Every structure is written in C-alpha cells, then in structure tokens.
Length: 232
Image 1 (cartoon, one colour):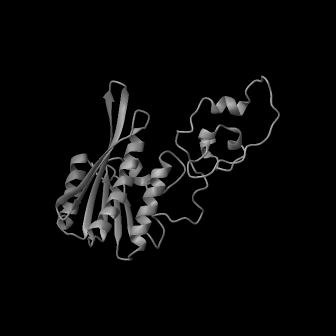
Image 2 (cartoon, rainbow, N blue to C red):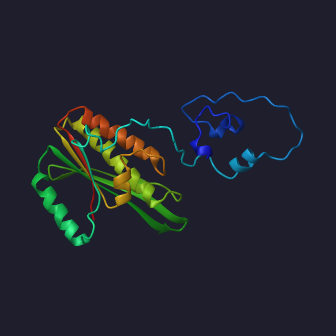
Image 3 (cartoon, rainbow, N blue to C red):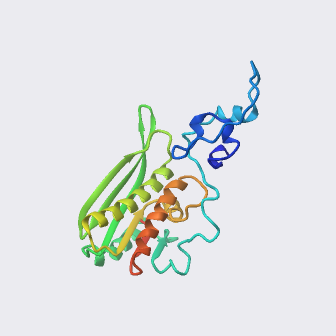
C-alpha cells in the first residue's frame, strides 16, 4: 500500500528520505517529541519490511474519461488482437505470415517483434526483454534489456512492448521515414491486452509510457494506425 501513496502523503512524511520520489523535493517532516527509546509504530514496522525500490502503483493516474482502444475516436486507428480460440499455434503462425506478407516490404509499415524471457543463472532466475524492428523487409534495430533477478516474465513482456513502441517512434523521427502503420507483436496475450490500458496493476509504468507514445503517434496524423497483436 505504501507504493500507492502520492508524493505529498502525510504517511510518507513519516518515512525515511529513500521513499521520496526522485523528481520531487521531499515533503516537510512533521515535528514530534524526541524519545530516548520506543517501540516502532505499525507503519514503521511495515515499511522496514519492504523497499522504496519496489514498483509504485498510481491508482488515480487515469481519469474516468481517459482514452481506451475501444473508444470510437481511437478504434479506427488502434487495433488490439488477442489469440484466436481453438486455433493451433501452427495455424496461427501461418495466418500471421499470410497477413504481413503484402506489407512486409512496404516502407509505410514498420513491424516490431517483442519478447520476455527467463533463464536460470548462478544467482537465481534472470529476466530480460528483447525487441527487433523491421522496415521495408530489413532489420532496422534491436534491443536486449536485462531486468535483474526480481522481475517477472510478465514485466519483461510489458517492458519489451513499451521499448518497441518507443524505439519505433524514435526511429521514425531520426530517419524521417514515412511510416504510417506500426505493427507490434508479442507472444504473451496478457501483455497484449493490458499494455495500452495503463490500469492499476503490475508494470503500470510501462503501460503508461506505451500509451503516451502511441497516442502521440496516432494524434499527429489521422491516417496513422497501430496494431498490437498476439503471435505464436
């Protein structure tokens, strides 16, 4: 619950400075009588058993009128596609290849494949994210992102999608490419369905950054589209 509190919460005012957000000045500490020895409060007891480095959730980040991919003014530009029920992976892979083939060499279409993975190392389970960008049938850029021993595979999948969107928009700005359509693919259906929502939950900050990036892209031109789809 400490990770859901705003930076000016009076609860955080009673914690050590490490809990203050880096981009804001620390809130004023409340004065209290000096005590020579006392038992820790319940709040201090809880805080001592968690870390300010853990993920912070922003329950009130999105107003009720915030955009979703289902909104009438966005569903023409943003398309989110989950897995098709009762379709084998082999059939889904063939359908995917057939769908992208007409546009693979078209410079107006950029394709981004993302993945999150977990491998066993000496220290424990190492999690990482990977991204690869294709434009006009050619590999444009790649990224490998280590995420340490404490992240989950879901976090890596969400981070990979967020990085893919950011890398795509940055590449367009640097190369002045006439890209009008971004296609993002991931093999994790949960991340595909959650990445644009910026809802309360794990990896919320990746979802927030993803949504801001995609909205910036589509709002700049009414003819632009984004596809976020599951792929086997």
